[in-house]
Length: 106
Length: 224
Image (cartoon, rainbow over all chains, first blue to last red; front, side):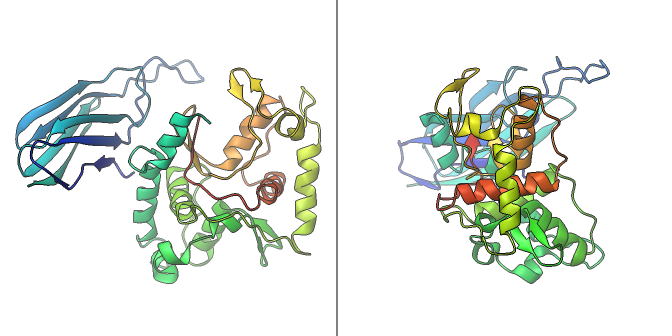
């Protein structure tokens, strides 16, 4: 499964507000459902999402069982300098996914 | 379909169906089966070679003597050419490949070929569409022709034009094929749903695509 789709403008002017959109493939199993035989389906969700901009944390989100599968997270930041935006999703069952995108600020 | 859902569908970075499309692209280029060939080795760049293909399916297959859906076409190619086992209906791989193929037909008008060979199957599909069935004794047309635009349990009844399959349904929280949707409808009228790939479903699919002829293809669509 292609794991994550990230949309960041490749170029931005210094001081400009940029929108960052992320979409990740994940079942977000709530832990409240049961199988047809009555057995509990264990919870399997993404717990946290963190975005860092040149090593500085600029956005963090906590996710909960009520969030639908394939969570879409969009937020904005101010473009300050060229560099990389790193994204990390961590969750149950040792789930961890990292992606990074380069941005040029002029 | 609300304005928000439409916006989600039209924005490739917000459309969850694109996750399957990306996966499909990697499967397209991956060698598989005993023949050790990838789809791309015969068909080349799907952006060019597969444009409009999904908008023409179900299409007549001479070897089988009947129309086949896009899913069946992929599996025929896998079994005959790639010597690989067929993919299960609604499996992640098959949805990914069909989503990738369908994506190449975005904007192409739906145009299934109706000729002497496919006419009997179209008629069979039409008969299924107008046949009352299930414990509720409903035919497809009673909702989708006579009552579209009205509400059924809070949802707007659509006109049943399958322009965007495989599509991401928010209710499913996943991508699904037209046959999954049809089976859901059959369960809704409390009929025994046909099996995936059953002749009745393929004929019905052919009739629905013929009924939607000329409408632009928009897969992978997003629906509530």
